[in-house]
Length: 483
Ligand code: ADE
Image (cartoon, rainbow, N blue to C red; front, side, top):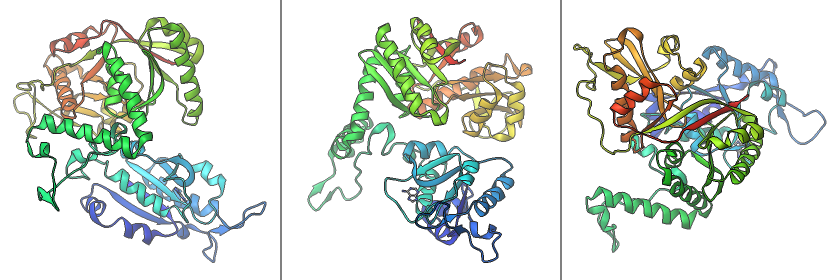
């Protein structure tokens, strides 16, 4: 991942980010960090970059021209308009979830302001996100930029040596991290909790979960409230486990924001895909939840959301049409892998990194170099722009025979497995089964429940899922989109 920091103090930023984990990741080529001195772009002969604000008022403003030219030098190099974050106390508060999401960008520009801010016109032109690191005012955007680079970098795969430590920690699913202990077993008369010495992984997991809950309750009651509310929802949703797998997985994966809950009427917003999920047992209360979505979408409207909604009851369709102006685009059944054991891979794909000599595919994550091939072969309902986004997010995997890509699969933003395609000339060789098996095992490794959604009429997909032992929801789910 490449960070481009636009600043008046490049040395300050570079020094702060050249040590320890971030410094190592830069040396290893996992990250690149460059600081661009905005002053180098001024056309003023005294190298001035600031001036008085029109209309009067305290302090000086950074002028539009040098900021724009510094930004453009990066945008031209990248070859497109990159995500550009302006660090300002007026922005959205930066969270772990945002760090995770930004870590999937290839390039990120961070714009650091100084003095009283920056001329509004250039911000309108270049900024895609306004972010703050907390409700206090600093003298400039450099420290916030450094904070963000640190938090985002550690979510880039490979930056933390133990891949796990990036996700089983504070803020995952609204819980703080559990306490940790190292040698000696007894220090100043205090012993390490005995369960951690027991070697029983199941008991250790349970103890840690409980300790995380206790700690959150005590130290961050605000977070605990969110955790508890979602946990209650999960209990209710679990009563129809297969039908609600999309919603329970959102909660389990820490992506869910609760929009509405009353009895068995629950509405979640997926912070990653920005899709709403709705379920109910009573039409009238279901309609109240739709109103809550409308309200929620309005307050988040700057990001153009409420475009997609997943309903879990057909009787809600006319109300979703009326209240939110949505129409049905797809009817699906949930397909859920309900077991904990991984699927056998013998005869399906190789994992040893060697080329296949015996007709067996290799499966690995694919990057942008396969964009054209993937788009050329893809022919389901999603538009190519979406597939491009999924490749950029590192969510697509390819099956290879030698160096040749012969099929692909991926995960959607909300977590379901999909987008399976095996190229015409390679069908009937169990490559689809290999790809599906790979994704199921990958999800299991991450502690998730693998699931997909099979569109009505897609008999081939139904047969494949069935052959792998997936269970189907009896009822359908309905994808609704803005008209
Ligand atoms: N610039 C000044 N204060 C800031 C803050 N709290 N967050 C981000 N950028 C800032």
